[in-house]
Image 1 (cartoon, rainbow, N blue to C red):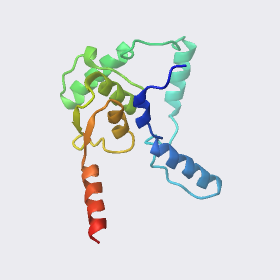
Image 2 (cartoon, rainbow, N blue to C red):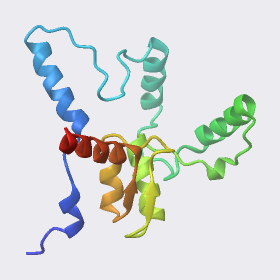
Image 3 (cartoon, one colour):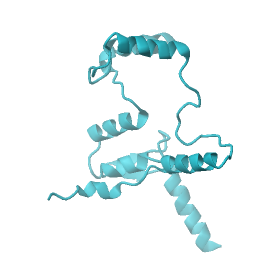
Image 4 (tube, helix red, strand yellow):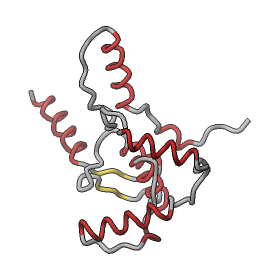
Length: 159
């Protein structure tokens, strides 16, 4: 039997999901919780969104789409960026993903080689999952959080 790839040894649980699970336990006990852990909205889609989704399903739009995303949506995003931000980008250069983590992970897989150095501070990627994603590629991470942790451990020794 083939063993699991060594890069899997850097995997860790999703911290936000652990916090979410604990918050749900507290809710079940009757506690009032304001969820800030997952980044998903605290409201359900509006009636028009639900109706549009139902119509799309009824119209047979329930199959895989192009790998980069639905062409009409990519065109609309390009128009939106041009109209609202004066950013001119071709729809061919827009790729859609079902979430930020997957989009960044795929970008990292495409660009990073083991030993590449990545400063995650300017991108504000120094939370939860991104250090894991970088370590999975063998990247060396520099971040303000790591620097703060080093300072804290130094202070702890001094005190």
